[in-house]
Image 1 (cartoon, one colour):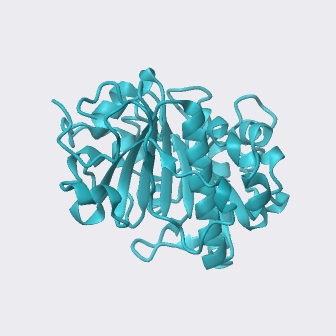
Image 2 (cartoon, rainbow, N blue to C red; image 1 turned 180 degrees about the horizontal axis):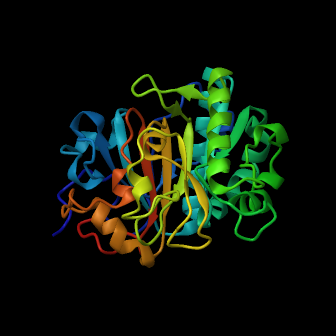
Image 3 (tube, one colour; image 1 turned 90 degrees about the vertical axis):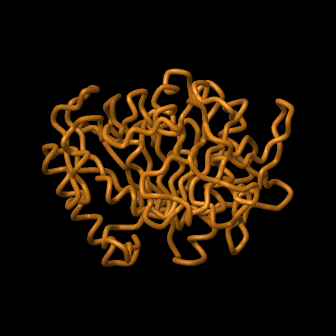
Length: 324
């Protein structure tokens, strides 16, 4: 079954058209001549029309919906990864300016994999000079329980590819204690998060009293997993802990820690970077009309309480969706 008709801010040709998402206020510190609007094909939805697990494809009932400031879910399709990376950098820089001005801190949660590569333009001009990196506080939505210098470490990947290239204070980068067991590392990380909430660094959701991170930057696996929440695994249903652990991950290495879904869903913003034909099946299940709520993939369970979720995708990833 195909996607229903939705509002799309695109030209009829294959060339990219400019789409301007909600602008942060106050304005980003990125110099105006260097700003790029989010380019790509945009499907957006109004928060008033969303059910808790409604896919983005099932909403946006009128052409006005695509440009509404109240849009809570967006799907943007890029022709090239370079354009995706440029738009992700702009979006992140604008949120950095917004939260630094409003809260004096910007809490950013990273995942591993190709997501880190997609952040590379933040470490280049104009963002390298314009972003107030002193306000950044960096966390991981999940981590492999391995030494920090291990090839499988999400910390090592982020450090090598991104964090070592930007001047974020070392004390504001929060890695797990890799000397502990998976259970101990999860408990230690949750304890640290609770202290940072008390200190006012991390916000608290008034809806469910879980931590409210400013921005989560995540990827998705071909099986529809996010963080280390895998389809059919019991930790997907954990609704009390902030951080839990996995000892039998279906994807190596087996031992991991991961944020729980209530924490993920309490975020103010999520940027979900999903590219490649290998993920088209999971994207189709998550965003098409054929939305089976009895067998949800973890990515389908990402539904923000009070925030904005943006899918950054490419054409191969949405190839199984029609009428895009």
